[in-house]
Image (cartoon, rainbow, N blue to C red; front, side, top):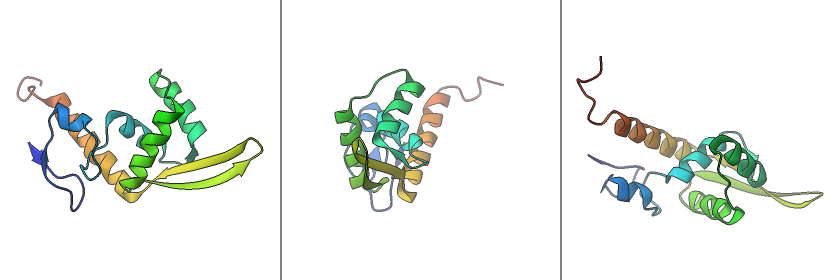
Length: 124
């Protein structure tokens, strides 16, 4: 199945390799990006997202991976970012954008298609 992620994105075959391969403009977030996007429907700091990610997945995420993922998603237009400060130092806030909502919806649809693959006519 071929699909295009975002308006203006090049068309690509969405096999396992291309889903995991992250290139800006591909149209689908990686698994980790998908999870991070879902956690930023409400504006949150990077620290909050990291803690919530661990709570939801049972896996920790390094700040390097977290902020690199957010940088890539910002470049793709999927999240908005703003800087602030508190008593502990710098805070970086993230929230999903309209394009991020669209990417999240496309990824959810893709995961649903994969979950149903090969089951047509076999489940009542």
